[in-house]
Length: 343
Image (cartoon, helix red, strand yellow):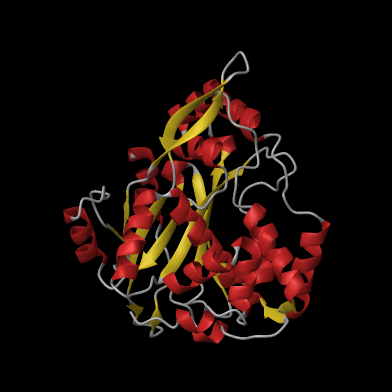
């Protein structure tokens, strides 16, 4: 698809200036030129809209995922070499609905600051096989071109007593990365839908800090308990609230999956198809990462575990509305979540 990103990758553009404040001008240029950016997000000056902060957050999270997921970086490089850009559909993260110390439990850990960025919950998606619930957060100003967030939460009270105890041990002393300065910036965005450039930088850095591990490395014993009951809970134990995956919107996910499989990518065996038939998804299996675990004597041991991954989605037009079908599907999500268990 043609790119308008180059229009936004100059020093005087708001998005470029925001991302430069986070990780420097070169990385900002790289992050913006790889994504398809809505021209409505262009602009200069010292007033920043909530939509611009939302897109800057997504661009930064996308860049971070490429740093952590080599197979995703390989795919994105091939897109760039072909002279195309990525249509970034949505990112996903996992949360704990249980004891989380100073961090708000479940989706509220993110909904609390996504709302000032113009996001609202569009729909709930029960995931009973996973003992989870998913929520689709859509950006109200530019719902088709600013990526959604699919925020899932693990219901700890549905685990065994041993599983609940392991969750309390791992997540019960989580910290909250947001402080007074960040909330002042979010409040400014909430009040007027825009804020000063300095407030936008503070809000962006604060939001990014939430996409990490807010607890200490888990003990190996607790991790093994979680792994036996909930692969998703075990994943959160090592990865925290990091971007679980980022998703490219593509015209034909079935054909793309076949091409990638032929190119040697470790693809999910099947394509998930929504009940209405309009949303189709598949993914590359999660890359392995090495994470520290605490042993009984207090020593830390590094072990390989599943990390994040990269997903692909095709969305058709909803004939009733004439607009792109931006919904998700509980069955699709359940199937996609297996990517981190099968890695």
